[in-house]
Length: 300
Figure 1 (cartoon, rainbow, N blue to C red):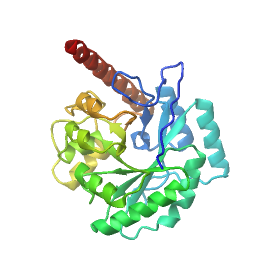
Figure 2: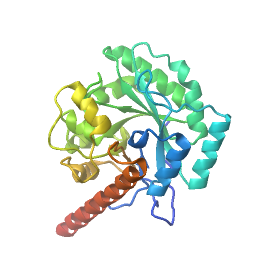
Figure 3: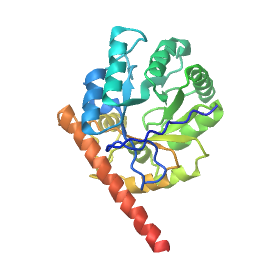
Figure 4: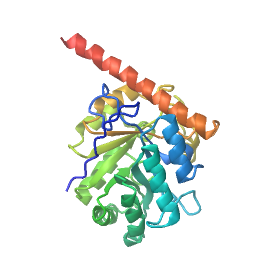
């Protein structure tokens, strides 16, 4: 069973949802890490004001004690969040974050998946944190089976400091799990810092890549896990202001890839950060569109 993103047609600047080519203006999603200090209702409000059309929600912490905003279907807070999403014309793209640790209790995420589905989420983001590839694949498949009961896709995100740290490792895990509702999430920063490049995406099987998170980075590559994690959480740059090959990345994406932005930049207030994230990404897409038009004209 395949879970396809829905197409929304709007008359405002958030028109479109899927990126079929860089010349199409997508409805941009924004990851909660961009302004994780904002609780869900305010997060949705400010993301909408900045111009985004979809949000991610951090429902589960990345580690014990980390920031997260659990939601329970039917609770007052959950119902209020549903109303806020509707009032702002926003959708939920993904909920996060589930580390696939060796001792993961898959069944314990049923309530999270129920709440995500009730909010209209498309998918749940996970990481691979188990050195045993067979056990990781089995737990990933079990998580996908549970998520599928709620109509959710599972996106595996690779990060250099985790056991699934590269695109190649993510592909191997996805193929070993063999679940129809399983895909890879590519973060532009993680792709670059793990030694990957945009052309690597072209060799993926159809349907394996379903979402991308954009940001930029400086030419100074961090050394060691601690520095890499610090850059990912506090040192990203607005798309188009660093050295990552983002136009090449956009050109390598398959049809239907959902575009998101993840740009935590604590030196700026949340409102300014979100506005910068949106405007810089739209500017990048304009550059990519003009590049595609120029290449198209040169082929004629």
